[in-house]
Amino acid sequence: MFENLSERLGGVFDRLTKAGALSADDVTAALREVRTALLEADVSLPVARDFIKRVQVKATGASVTKSVTPGQQVVKIVHDELIATLRGDEDPGKLKIDNPPAPVLMVGLQGSGKTTTTAKLARRLKEREGKRVLMASLDTNRPAAMEQLAILGTQIGVDTLPIVKGENAVQIAKRAKSQATMGGYDVYLLDTAGRLHIDEVLMDEVQAVRDAVNPRETLLVVDGLTGQDAVNVATEFEGKVGITGVVLTRMDGDGRGGAALSMRAVTGKPIRFVGMGEKTDALESFEAERVAGRILGM
Amino acid sequence: APRRVLDDAFVEELEDLLVQADLGVETALKVTANIAAGRFGRRVSTAEIKEALADEITRIMEPVARPMPLYPKRPQVVLVVGVNGAGKTTTIGKLASQFRAAGKSVIIAAGDTFRAAAVEQLQVWGDRAGVPVMTAPEGSDPASLAFDALTRAQAEGVDLLMIDTAGRLQNRADLMEELAKIVRVIRKKDPSAPHNTLLVLDATTGQNAVTQVEVFRQMANVTGLIMTKLDGTARGGVLVALADRFGLPIHAIGVGEQIDDLDAFDARDFAAALTGSPD
Ligand SMILES: Nc1nc2c(ncn2[C@@H]2O[C@H](COP(=O)(O)OP(=O)(O)OP(=O)(O)O)[C@@H](O)[C@H]2O)c(=O)[nH]1
Ligand SMILES: Nc1nc2c(ncn2[C@@H]2O[C@H](COP(=O)(O)OP(=O)(O)OP(=O)(O)O)[C@@H](O)[C@H]2O)c(=O)[nH]1
Ligand SMILES: [K+]
Ligand SMILES: [Mg+2]
Ligand SMILES: [Mg+2]
Image (cartoon, rainbow over all chains, first blue to last red; front, top):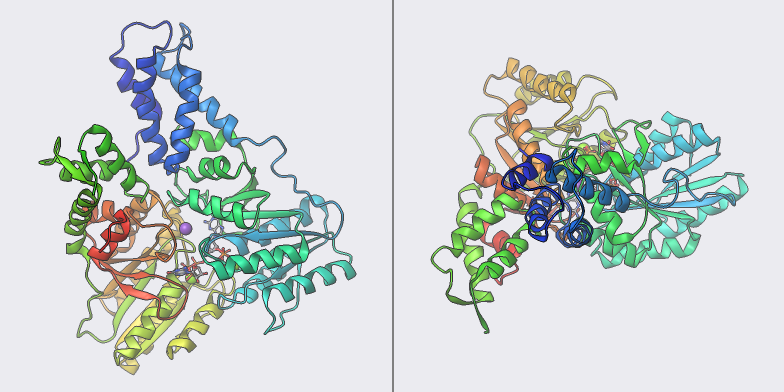
């Protein structure tokens, strides 16, 4: 259903005869197509606008080499800028988890994939980095949320904090901290209940958890199929909780993944991992090139 | 109120408003063009133009705002499908509670035999709704559970059998085939079943919802939609694109995590929330 960007721009530039340098008019016409492509890929509108402005500056007057068409030249500029924006400065797969036991807090909307990602991350840390990991569910809300994490823990051979009914999220977090300290764990992962970014009570709760354990990493887990709301989610979680990175789930779907750009642009924080399936081994380090190509439908 | 000439710039602002509500570019342009026609070049107030937008969206959505039909057929089989985490299990709990309140007898089949603690989750919802939940061991074939559940529902003469399924992305051919198999197996017992196949969509989802409907409809014969998580800031505008393209009825909306947080889909309320105009 979606045309890829090259096809779109082909249409615009077929009408242009002379090559050489990209004129301001060429660029404006081309960027209208880029804008549509970004919006169809679910990039949030304000993020798409800013992105277009930056590309406009870079593209206007850019010379078109003989070997490419003006359309290809614009695609290249857009593609490069997209990769530059998506890519962080550091190795995305490397979490700051020195100083044991290092707390890692997982947050996000309902159903985004926090619990599954917690288990995926635990498995990765255990198998790839030989870490001793403890997982704890702070989800006192969703039916069987704690059992879900416990079952996953058994499946991957990672300890979970024993379930004590009646404790609140902060109490569980503190218990996880002391058990992680006494038990000699390297890392403890705190899975939290799904919450809407506008739910004051639950946003206060996660702040209290944060203040109780001082997480080394706070990862916002976001559905890769998210639409325009991404900008609100990113703004609120960054503003109210403060995040250190993003995990995009369900990237095994056929969504275009524009939420990646929205998340990155709004929070300025690195996208660290992508979820590529339901199973606990389906977690990959984020690669800017792949996601850029996907957003542009290439 | 201040009035402005409805020019290209104004039209673009309206398009942007709709794009930000997830209508998608194509549908946003179409809806905006419809209301701009006949008003272009005239002086209008923002309130007036938003109301016109809301009217247009109401016009598109009214034909699909229909509750889930109840049939005299007993048991009426309701299959619930959708991508991962959309809200299927929660919605089954809410629906079961509503049917119970309406005096119907209900059985739920915990057809998600894959995800960790999916069964335990549904059992809690069954308890809350006062409805028995049939389960099968983790990793077992959901189609055979569905078959057994229908056998029991027929024997007990219950009004409704609701079948939960594991979340699946529509591009996973193997999992979509598993769903098609559930339907085939149910039909061996009752060729007219499932009587309703509900696709649950998450309001935070963007344009991928279009492909979700396309593929689930093809593979599982979806008869109606439910959109969850409309209690957040996502406005679910992709429903407008879906109404325009597929015309499937929208039975209900999820507006929270509690058992009563399921409302009828109201075209005018939806349009008002979407355009930010007072209703
Ligand atoms: N296909 C796919 N499914 C995923 C991925 N990550 C998680 N899921 C599925 O998404 C659904 C929701 O995942 P959960 O881990 O329960 O999500 P959550 O954020 O903990 O949900 P709440 O605790 O209810 O807020 C489950 O069916 C998972 O199997 C992914 O990367 N790809
Ligand atoms: N805010 C809000 N949350 C909801 C709504 N409906 C469901 N949820 C939450 O979304 C999360 C996922 O819901 P589930 O019912 O487990 O979704 P599912 O489609 O069965 O998930 P899988 O079986 O893992 O594919 C849970 O945390 C629910 O409480 C809703 O209308 N509003
Ligand atoms: K979602
Ligand atoms: Mg969870
Ligand atoms: Mg479920």
